Image 1 (cartoon, helix red, strand yellow):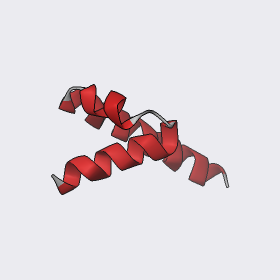
Image 2 (image 1 turned 120 degrees about the horizontal axis):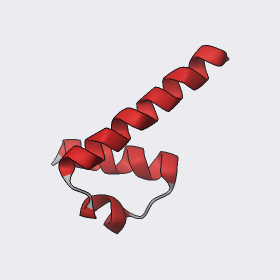
Image 3 (image 1 turned 90 degrees about the horizontal axis):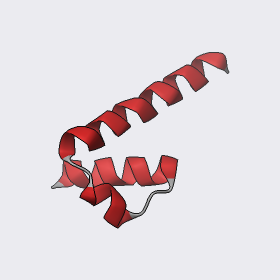
Image 4 (image 1 turned 120 degrees about the vertical axis):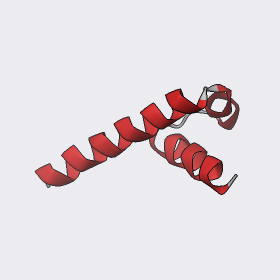
Length: 48
């Protein structure tokens, strides 16, 4: 359950999607968005 909360918080923080919308995503799709956000952050931090 803690992992789910972290996934939801991570996506909501970066994309400002609603809690309900994020929870409605299938777990693999949620993980895909987490990976995409991590990749965006990595590329951004490499440019700074």
